[in-house]
Length: 118
Image (cartoon, rainbow, N blue to C red):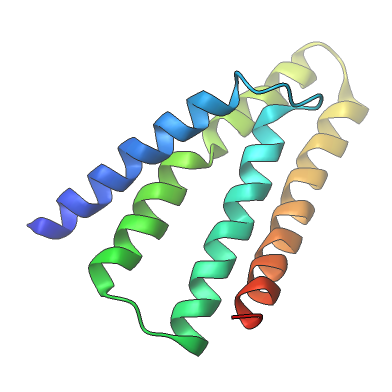
């Protein structure tokens, strides 16, 4: 039962952080920035917990499923892609979709690399 609480608290914090990012003066699309940053964070945590240090499973749930799950925004990414398509901005929609996927995967590897430094 407490596992749900850890995920819920992490998710709430992640959602608050995501909302806060929309007020930062980031010059590019904030959703893609959030998703890439979330990928770096979850990559770091994943590598760190698997290869370096075992963290408490409750903390892992809080950080990955909760915090990163609430922070990243696949549904927002999908909606923004559809909105670009509806505006007949097919090239932008394609670049945005591919860029989001590729850069998020690269973000996971950056997180792995950063975790190796510890």
